Length: 289
Ligand SMILES: [Zn+2]
Image 1 (cartoon, rainbow, N blue to C red):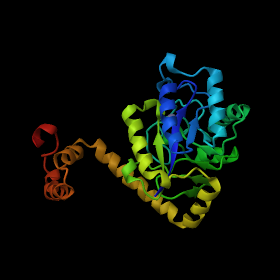
Image 2 (image 1 turned 30 degrees about the horizontal axis):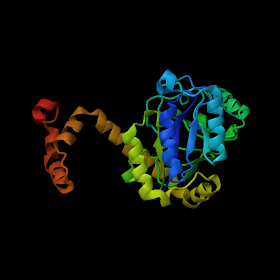
Image 3 (image 1 turned 135 degrees about the horizontal axis):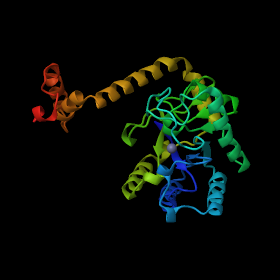
């Protein structure tokens, strides 16, 4: 297993103390993450409290410092405001700033954000889609604008699609990371426990951390290339099944009822009680008691 770390929702409006706490842990282990900078953030749901945000000059100095220290800057959308209910190619969230919009609309919006970053001396080749949602038009526009890669992908190896390198970010728990993956963190939402959990993980797995390196990841994608479309399709199918299960009260009642801390007992309960799914037993919570 090898992993990168990415920090989402980097804006002048983020909670500076929370960001500083995460940065301190990453610095302690010499981790250089990918950071998703939102060029024109208009999404108030990712703002920190008013008195905790950065002053403009201080934010500019912070980004400069991170850049000088080898942190990799990705463009994280443009406004970070969800405009559609389209979950795009990965089907992770039913909302997007981009997918579902026309190519022209997406291109113009992406370019506006990119220009803003360019003006600040930032020239990203990596894109981070808000909500992990993007479609084929997004990929086409990104390519046209000179982006080479995006930090998303549900497979455990980098792969290439529509000429764009997908750097896997399977959104799994620390304990289930495998292959090449990315740990996705939102510093603005992290409390002390989350920071402590990150610290514990890094202290144990410091040697498996890698930094985003387009050439190296591209070479890996080339090597494993032919596996990709079916592997991604399978990962998508699995996720859709899981989402479907999560949305079905009957299935989720069954999963809760048959849960057990011992894996073997859990499996036995699930196998033996599964025929009851055909009856009304798990239709509502009361009957499962
Ligand atoms: Zn975000």
